Amino acid sequence: MKSDNLANYRIFLFSNSLLAFAGGLFGPFYIIFLQNFGGSIQQFGFSIGLMALFQSITSFFAGKYSDKMGRKAFLLAGGFISAVIIFLYAIITSLTQLYVLQIAIGITNAIATTTGYAFLADITKKVSRGADIGKYHAIVGIISALAVMGGGYVVGQLGYKIIFYFTATITFISTAFLFYIKEK
Image (cartoon, rainbow, N blue to C red; front, top):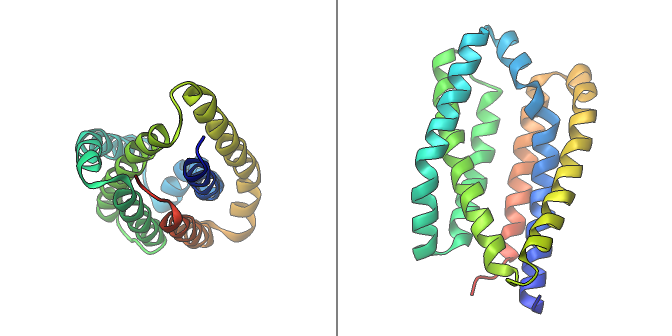
């Protein structure tokens, strides 16, 4: 990798490792959060379906416009908006609000995921792209797995609301590191 690309790779890897840690703390316990919130398994399915639907629809547009406008702006906007949305999970009071947040997080997930993969492709060499992306996913995945293992303890000790605040804060911080990436 060229030095700019290597620096971008390291920054992106660090940023997304922090994000994976934050997501791993709470992500797997979402169904329990929903049940404690008063939702049923049917409402859980509907809320996840809303997120997936809007993520799928938005992915095409996120990719198309990031090709024209650059990846960095999309990565920053998606990350900072996600931090706000995650914070809002701690203060919502109705299933309707939850559904709105699920739609919003689906949109921001599409922006982050689609432009993130495109950015990884942009900064890796064709001859080692598979290995570089594989290394990225291995590191991010291990960090996420460790957070999942510890997440149950943290949620059990501190509750859900503190996890949302913690996750939102880490999401904000991890996104701020993306200011240091350089686009071609």
